[in-house]
Amino acid sequence: MLNDPSIKYTPFPAIRLADRQWPNRTLSAAPVWMSTDLRDGNQALFEPMNAERKMRLFHTLCDIGFKEIEIAFPSASQTDFDFVRQLIEGGHVPDDVTIEVLTQAREQLIRRTIESLKGARRAIVHVYNATSRPFRENVFGMSKAEVVDMAVAGVRLIRQLTAEQPETKWVLEYSPETFTATELDFALEVCDAVTAAWGATPDDKVILNLPTTVEVTTPNVYADQIEWMHRHLARRDSVILSVHPHNDRGTAVAAAELAMMAGAERVEGCLFGNGERTGNVDLVTLALNLYTQGVHPGLDFSDINAVARTVEYCSRLPIHPRHPYVGDLVFTAFSGSHQDAIRKGFAVQQADALWHVPYLPIDPADVGRNYDSVIRVNSQSGKGGVAYLLEAEYGIVLPRRLQVEFSRVVQGHTDHHGGEITAAEIWQLFSRTYLGSEHPVRYLEHHLFEHGNAQGIRLSVEIDGRVHLLAGEGNGPIDAAVHALRGVGRVVQVRSYEERSLASGGKGSDAHACAFLEVTRATGAGECYGVGIDANIVTASIRALVNGVNRLAADAVAADETRAA
Image (cartoon, rainbow, N blue to C red):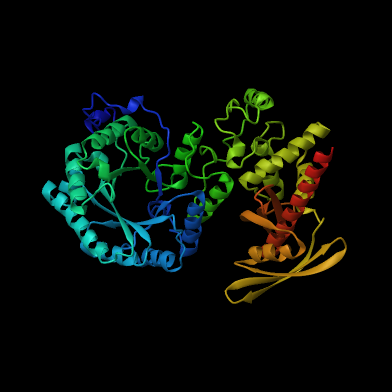
C-alpha cells in the first residue's frame, strides 16, 4: 500500500445540494422490488445455473412475492434465450409477475432480445449504455453527443419493434451504466432524451434505473445524486425512479436505503447479496430492515431457512454464518452475559407486545427460526470440541447445522450426567441419536430402477413387525424414497443433503460413505437431521432418510407427552 494514497486516489466530489431533503425523511413504505438473481446474480457465478436450477429459483422468487424479475440477457447466449422461451411457452409466469430482460443499446442485440419475448403477457425491456467519462473516452472513444444518440437510437428501435407486437404490454427501462461516475448534468441529459424518445406519459411510465455500477463513494453522496435527479428530471411524473446498488465499498444496503429516502421508488438486487464482484444489494436484508421498523416489505420470508437452502442449491454458493437475519449464527450467543440477557428478555416478552428482547433485533419466529434451535452454550464439551473429536477419532465431518443440533444433545447429556465426556461416549451418543433408530420404521433393503426420465425405487421396510413393500419415483434415489415412504403415511420434505467420505483411520465404521439429510414435516415444521453410514452412498442416503423420519416421529411423540403433562 502507498504511504500517501492521495497521489493515486482522490475523494469523490461533493454534490452541490445545500437544501437536501433526504436526511429528514424516514422509510414508511416498501419500494417496488426487482430481483436480478437470474441475470446479474447468475452471470457472477463460477458455474452459471442450468435450466432446472434457474426454473426452481424463478418459482421461489414468485413464491416470495416478487412482481418484477429480471430473468436473462437473451442476446448474450442461446441458453439465456431458450430460458426466456421456456418460461413464456411453458406458461410459468404468473399473471401478476412481469419478466424483465437486459440488452445493450445495439441494434442486433435489441432485435434478438425482442424476439425472445414473443408472446409474453407483460415484459420490461431493460436497455443500457455506458455514460461516464472513462468509458466515453477510454473504452468506446465516443463524444457525449454520440452517447446520447446511441441511447436514443436504441430506445426508438425498441419502440418500433414492440409496436409490432401489441399483444404484449411493454415497459421500457433505461440505465445509464456507470451512473455514479457520470457527470450529473450529462446523466440528466441522456435520461431526458430517453424519456422523450419513448414518449413517456403518466400512463406509460419509463423506468429510469440509476445504478452504482461500481460503488465509488459514500452512501450519502449517492443519495444526493438520486435526489438531484429526482428534482431535475423533465418528465418526473412519467418516470419510475429505480436504483441498482452494488457493494464494492460494503455499503450497498445503506446506499439503497438512503436512495429511497431521496426519491427512489424501485430497488434492484439479489437475495443474500449475490452478484458481480462484491455483489448486488442484498434484498433480504433490505426487506427485513423495513420489517423491523414496522413496515411490511411486501415480500414473504416466513420460512427463511427454506429460501436460504434453495438459493444455496441453485447458486452453489454458501451463505455466510454471520449473514444478517439468515446466517446460522445470527441468533447465537456464546457469551454468558448475552445468554442471560436474552433469556431474561424472553421471560418477560409478551406475545402481543412490542418486541424488546436484548441482542435480537427481530423475533426469530417471524422468519421461521427458533432461538432454542440455534443457541449454542459454551461448555467443556462445546460444539467445536465435539466436532473435532468426531472428526479426529471417527472420521465424521459434521455439516455446520448438524454441529449445532448435536451440540445441544451433548449439552443435555453433560448437564444430566456431569463430569467429562470422552470421545467414545460422544460417538455412542451420536450413534444412538442418529444411526440406531429403527422405530417406527426399520429399513430392510431397496432396489433401484429407471422409468423414463424418472428414478424409481422398490423399498422394503418393517413397521411394528410387519414388512411393507413400497415403490416410488422421483428425480433421484432420495426423492424416489421420499415418495415411496408416503405409502405408509410418512410424509416429509428434504431440506438439505450432504455426503462425506469418512476420513481414513476412523473408528466409526469400516464403511467409507456417510450421508446427512435435513428433513422436515410436510408442513415445514420440526427440522432435524438423519444420518446414514454404508459402503454404498445410495444405501447410506436412504438409511439417513429413514433415520430422519424416525427422529421426526420421536420428536412428535415427545411434544405430545409434554402437552399432556
